[in-house]
Length: 293
Image 1: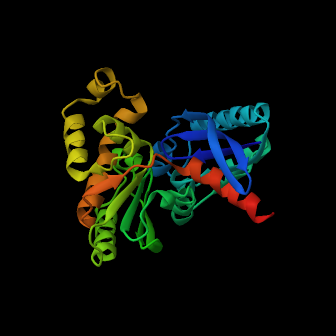
Image 2: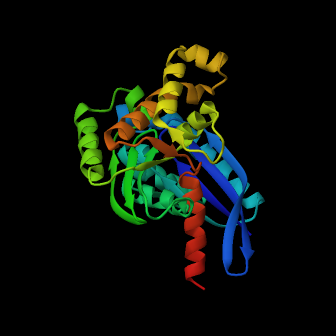
């Protein structure tokens, strides 16, 4: 049995096809195929407030390809979600209707729903319940933050600060200040807060830091990686460091967001479980299936 997850983000769109493994009452999944296409819908959505005809056509073609792959892989359940760029695009709902003609039902989700789906990938199973955590997910158009203490969700908020938005100069000082105040207010009563970082950029930053798979990344080590990356030009980050074109530019503002949030929250280390929205979608589908039994 196979499930599929589609994530239409501001920087890239992704398709994850996963094999569902049943072991008695326990149901888990193993990643089979992951495809990532760097469409950068956010460049249109955040500046022009509309997805251009060219990118809309590319999106439809990609959805047709995803649907064909899902058919070939005999996918039995799927969920498709669109985030910040499609939320802000004036023609977002029209694109949803066009994608439905391809045979895919797409849901445009808000930031809180996005954060809850990612958290549904059961990050909490990797954490110690008695500690406090600041969950940070950085995307192309938004940053989702959540505070956990003793295993309970204390607060969650989505902010319109993301890597593509920053590169396009569409982030505002007011939103940065709002995020800073929210983090300070929600972390001031907790000591020894540990960060949880998700998203493609923190995964890459973690690999660049060359830490062991189970070891948290310290604020100082992350700052060192940031300074190292900043010492190279964009062209050098691609040709010398070997970063993909669509990663080499966004990784700098992503790191900036992580460092600022960690500083405001007094977070000295960050755990990188290497999960994202597509992982959370697959787990959501599994949970929905189990609830019907």
